[in-house]
Image (spheres, rainbow, N blue to C red):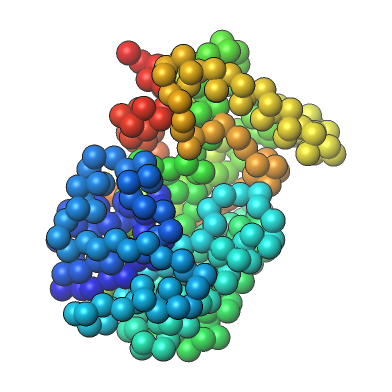
Length: 364
């Protein structure tokens, strides 16, 4: 059975991956490294149970320190069959220096240790935002032109890692990942919908409903990563994207059903006018949403939550995320078990947080 080292393993994808591996009896040993302790990571009861399994070891580590990284790789029972790197800054709108320190430097240092220890396989989880934003669907050979600073740092990671001489490097580029534990993907739109339910107003987003925001469920990301541990080949890159061809309109339709609100779009003409002064528009939008969100949380006895309706300016431009995730299907017979975004899947995501008293239960 496989022995896996998961870097950045208490984050959104990491926690779900550990649960998937434990539930499916995939490994003999899973070592999870993260700066954030599980006790303060907003774990569900099910994920906490997975981390308490005897095959799982958590170690707090500073993945910017070569000495700390060396200790993280050490294990008395031997080496690792595969390292999966999920570490790095996940917030949007940070400075280039933050992404340099928390994403690029971390990835390079962790990969160098894997080279030194001759780890048989190394999986780097990047993002599909590295592709040029246009109306043409992007497969793994698509034009590369990152449109967020986070994606710019991820692409630089990919390029640097290819130069290090890793035995088997596999790069994974997921589209917008959603599901239980999601904070920065679809969640800000879900939270904004809750705000408009409180305000009793129509929720309108910039641009049009046909703006693509392609998605993939975190459970499918986890099963794909496990498949790549088993069958992934050196030098391969795989996109991950469901069959939903998710757009702003499709998301809004589900949010209307869940929250009982009306939604719409400002349209291209007004959005292009807003684009001229997008910084001011972003500040106004977030100011409108943040106060009622705080009030809503207070009304439901929520004193602290990692969830926020805040949308970074980078994400408000007319940049379609239009991704072809079929290569992993044709190459490795992968199956997306959650091919369509549904009301039930979004409700499951919401329920993850309501059970932890981090999202107001508006349906009592």
